[in-house]
Amino acid sequence: MAVPSQAAQQRGFDSGTTSFEDLKTLIHGKLVDKLDLSRLGDLEGETLRREIRLVVEHLCDSENTLLNRSERERLIEEVLDETFGFGPLELLLKDNEVSDIMINGPKHIFVEKAGRLQRSPVVFRDNEHLMQILDRIVSKVGRRVDETSPMVDARLPDGSRLNAVIPPLALDGASLSIRKFGSNPLALEDLLKFDAFTPEMVMLLEGAIKGRLNTIISGGTGSGKTTMLNTLSSFIQNDHRVITIEDAAELQLQQEHVLRLETRPANIEGKGQVSATDLVKNALRMRPDRIIIGECRGPETLDMLQAMNTGHEGSLTTIHANSPRDGCSRIETMIMMGGIEMPIKALRSQFASAVDLIIQSNRLQGGPRKVTHITEVLNLEQDTVIMQDIFLFVQDGIDDQGRAFGHFEATGVRPTFMDRLEQAGVRLPGNLFAARRLN
Image: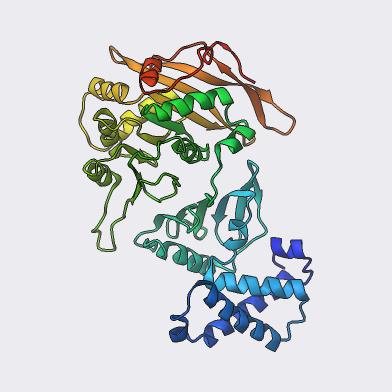
């Protein structure tokens, strides 16, 4: 007998899940046979769903399913999800407590809730069923995934980010990772409530964005970089022209004057690719006040640094790194791996003159996400990029639930960019940087 689905557990369905799944498959198959596709083309959105719902209800009645009201409603909704949505994934996508979905083949699905991984009772029928849903997802955004192109990045309609690998690279069936990113991203107040940082740190970050400091958000996978980038973007002036560049669009800026650009992979003939480097170079011709790159991971990093150095102050990006110092090294590596020959001293000089601030976001043991460093980039002395920490998170230990805990502190360092902020009209309290524990 298959593992009972989460919906069955919640709604009290106590028949074997196999028979329920068989019934759902039967109803869905009859629905597909019954649909007049030429007529459906004239219907849209909710009207189409209502029409199909009536057909499904009729099919349920004709099968004499012997389901109670809640079980029947669940069956209808799951058939509709199978027809219009993403099948078994819909239940997890609608669950606001789920932040990540990891699929290792059709029968092994894991989710992250409240920072902890757990096995989900949701399953697909088989790998063919999983591939059908994956094809539906990627086709909606003009991507493809097949044996000749077995890896894909895409986004779901709600902005969630998907990465998939299929056979022959994935040995146990299609593997999907979904980073949920809903239509209502976490606001500043939410991050404060979760103790991701303190009000004092927010004052500095708000001033840095309004004062147009070039900022890099650094962190590992799942550390909250994109959430932080979205949050900081709320401080950008509404009259600034902002151009965003992403591989899979997920930023949700609220300003009026925002132009969103997205990279494009090569087609089946290997042509038509548009890289982040191409988009950065083109963006520079479009009179941006600021450029935001969702994530620097290749040669576009150098173009971003050059943009920061040539009149596009207040630009932002994210990188994968575990500390501000590692972030500097990571940028060097990405530029060199792009085949750009440049003396290391010149490269570091470019970095030191372009970047003003590094915000380090880390996911600690047990799941809590913290801004562990707010670090100023000063200059280059000989061959070394000089930095100084302004605010830090200090881990004090691990609690009984296995979660890291600690405190924030100000280091006592007054940033050298304060004069620049004041010239931009940003006023911060004089005691903001006094050395002390903040919480």
